[in-house]
Picture (tube, each protein chain N blue to C red):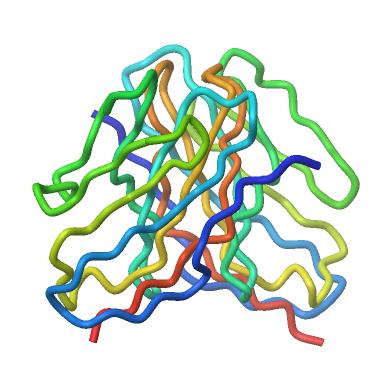
Amino acid sequence: EPEVTQTPSHQVTQMGQEVILRCVPISNHLYFYWYRQILGQKVEFLVSFYNNEISEKSEIFDDQFSVERPDGSNFTLKIRSTKLEDSAMYFCATEAGQANTEAFFGQGTRLTVV
Amino acid sequence: AQKVTQAQTEISVVEKEDVTLDCVYETRDTTYYLFWYKQPPSGELVFLIRRNSFDEQNEISGRYSWNFQKSTSSFNFTITASQVVDSAVYFCAPRSRDDKIIFGKGTRLHILP
């Protein structure tokens, strides 16, 4: 069964450092998303990406965040200067593009900012 | 504006009991889609079921069943004969047409042996 793969599974970084979270989507999927879940809280939408550009972003997704799909396969989330409050589980999700189909989520990357 | 409410924060039941998880989705859209995801202790998000707003037929799949009532905006999910492995956080996750999936706050389900 095809799956969304995220790397790394866990990253620890010092405050102020840049991190890049990577996602390999399911091959025929066209829509990509990043979500975030602070420990014990709900899953929050960050950004959606289609046709090599951002479709929508939440208020959480400020200037320190960026996304790209540089090589047509990996979908990345970059956090330029991490803050303590960026510590969370980050989920990548991809879907074929029809509203009535489910999004497939990766296993998540746990980011810990110290 | 859209709003998804999972009023049950935490539920505990004894193994083999049936349990129903509640979800209310308020939207002005007439076409929308409803999903349930499970998040076990390992942390991943696992898709469980999908429903369209224009189909109110209730369905059963194995130990899972769901009851969708458009008039009350409720999309409830039932696990029959619960098992310890069902212990997880369950998220109701609706989306309106051409929009992203949004998540409720989740219901933490404890199945006690």
